[in-house]
Amino acid sequence: MEAIIRPTAEAAADLAARIIARELRANPHLVLGLATGRTMETVYSRLVRIHREEKLDFSLCRTFNLDEYVGLPGSDRHSYRHYMNHHLFLQVNIDLRNTHLPDGMAANLEAECERYERLISKFGGINLQLLGIGRTGHLGFNEPLSALRSRTRVKALSPITLAQNAPLFQEPAQMPRRAITMGVGTILECQRCLLLATGAEKADIVAKAVEGPITSMISATALQLHSRCTVVVDEAAAARLQEADYYRWIFENEPEWEAFR
Image 1: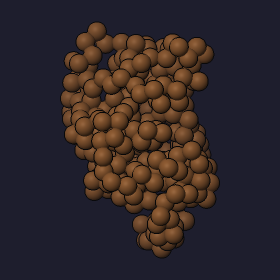
Image 2 (image 1 turned 60 degrees about the vertical axis):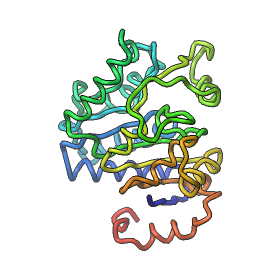
Image 3 (image 1 turned 45 degrees about the horizontal axis):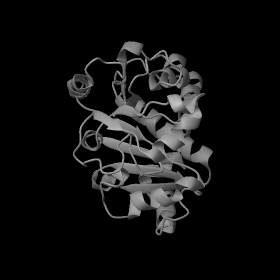
């Protein structure tokens, strides 16, 4: 794992978008794992701008999202399918048939989870997985006590997650209590992981995820086991990192980041 600290939330999101753009240019057939949430909106707006201004081509790539609410059709504006269409898919030249999310309306949810795993495998696995981190330290909806080898499955949402996401619904009581999520094990099989976290409210959990012990209580700590994971944070989210000065040095001195400086 490596941590990169940028001065502002906008600069952190811009770096994440430019990493994705570089990977897509290097491999037009990229299999891209995607995340949702307010943190990602700036990333997607940057990618749309790069597409329009620099002709970034999405036509041959395929995408797999981390999760989807159980019980919401893709037409529901609270669904993650609607989120992705609105913030990215309908604004770039991607074929919607190549964009994949779990089906939260599936009659057999267990079979849907198995289908999603098979589909990821069919296309050779995910090359680059974009991740956010919840306040409980979850990746996707891998809530506390998620097994580190878990696969795509249905998870009950924790009270903290419900409280965090409920304001996004006009009637918070109507927020689904379950979601389909990629498992921690599924995420760890991606070739590269890119986690973005911004804001002071993420400082405690970022420090635990990056520098704390590996535990199923905080699924993001499993990324310490990944052979190629980059964590991009702003100064506010980096406030409790003990080795922050070292992480800043990495970005300013390592050749890998020269093109982004």
